[in-house]
Length: 292
Image (cartoon, rainbow, N blue to C red; front, side, top):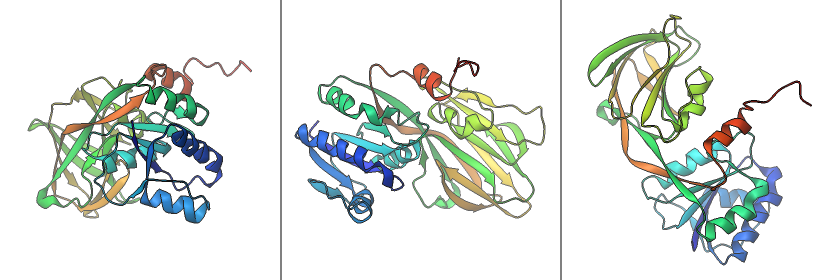
């Protein structure tokens, strides 16, 4: 653990003390610190803080032992996209409100880094989804750690999403959209539309319709080895595809195929942090509002 990369949110101007603590701890551990270009610009120009660094990460290829994501789950998703398939484990440090990926609190930074540099941690491999589009129409990074969402473009009428699994017709969802989520994403957008929570070690995906026209339509859990094929009809001739929040507009009629990606994202977890503990803390399972 000599080369450490730091990727951060640019919406945490009130977190300067936490950021300084992180850099000071890394310096005390005698690490080589590399900082994402945009985050470094934020530190120096917005916060007037110039940390001692070994280099600036300006492109999508870098040699690191570990990547630190400083922010919330959104920052973690962006960090995962930058890391891509480089096999660099990511530790999420939470400076926001709700964190399932970034679940290390700002008050745990020093202890967590001590454990990290003593090799006392675990690494979870998280499934990603890959989007295939005709003619490679999707212009950005076509992988998603949380979910791929097919959505109506605006406040117009609902869309129809013709869905097949392994080339066998399933149904045509008439809805505001359809969310295809990994176990990691089951606690994100999918959960907000009443999809089930799936533990990270499950080899499953979930299809969760968004505001379906029929009340009989329910979320569906499928093996992650399945291929999902989609065709979309829309009255305004366009629809939206969002991969972990990165969205592009597509013309109706284009065929989409979604598969499990051929690589995983490596997520660092503390030994005393479990998914069940995170559920209890973040979703307040078992909490009694009457107890003050």
